[in-house]
Length: 159
Image (cartoon, rainbow, N blue to C red; front, side):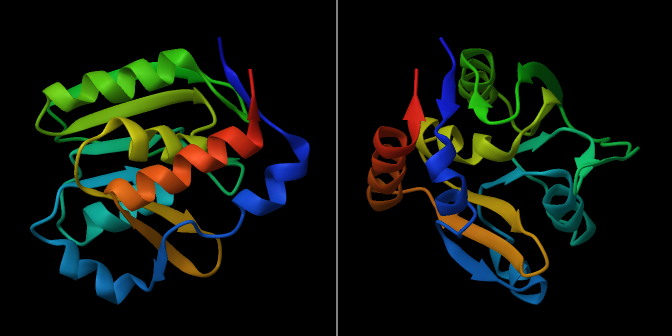
């Protein structure tokens, strides 16, 4: 059973649900458990010498296919996730990633909405995702962010 984003919520989810920061401030995440969603965000974090615990990518940046060798991940997982949806398979892989030190989750489809189950399913850390032409949004995983995401699920998704 996949969750599908309601059309009326698309604009709502284009707004950051965390704190928007500039690339220079990302170095402050050095000793944090980092989860990245999106190729550009993942490449930015890797370029700063930081290693995500979980990186979720679909080999696309701004709807264009890219080629990038994500190396030095101890585990690679794969899942299908259609645009505008959150698949059960992708949520299960996010849960499975908790077992690994650093994991790459390759998505066949689109990874954008996987920010939400990452906040819900992981116990700690910082979820980072890109806000096009503005910077990177950082969400600290805590009770407050989990509650915010739960409310978004109730309001914006249908089974």
